[in-house]
Image (cartoon, rainbow, N blue to C red):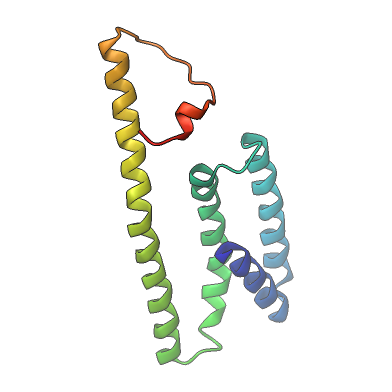
Length: 133
């Protein structure tokens, strides 16, 4: 949701400032990125999909952060940037548990493969894969 809000704000600010080339580039990049994303992912897989969508937020945030300084005084700008930083730290700490679970699941599968002398493995989507180990 943050990415979509950032997208709307970036497009809105660039149109307001009459920077139509930047607006066009944002929309073009958004279209190309989404086309590539939808080519790779046929369904929304939270961990992978969200990590692939993060660059969009950064790309859309560039024109927004470049322009927002004109509309906010220094103190308010620091509050906004501090809030963004705090939200980012919160998200990083929340992602840590998901990452650790994923690493542990991978290690468990690799150890199981090693104990069964399996060197190559194809995992298909099953209920056993969906539940945590």
